[in-house]
Length: 143
Image 1 (tube, rainbow, N blue to C red):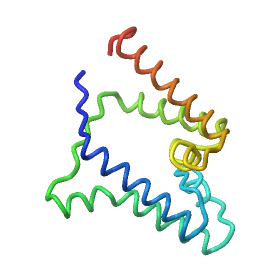
Image 2: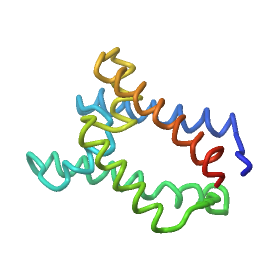
Image 3: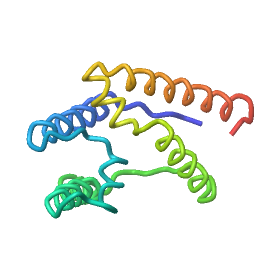
């Protein structure tokens, strides 16, 4: 398996995520936790709460269309696993998000920036789990 690292695109993406997180905190006083934003759509506190969540989610979903408009081609997406594996992975992530009280964007981006001890522990935990998972899948199982 070849892993393509694109430092400039990665830097630009990280900067945009950071800008979005800071903007949401500045404008709405809210933490940019993607799963919390999504789950808040199912039971919003108010119409205004529903609206900003929906607009933010729409922005995330339409990102590939913006790339297409700017570059003339959709971003390349290579998913080297089956649909079943994607569903199982999604369920595992969902359970982890529930037990961990947030996701990578909430803990890893916003929580770490606020020096939250809970977010630091959560980020260290999911990063360690990621390293172990990649090692097992690539070197033990051999996928």
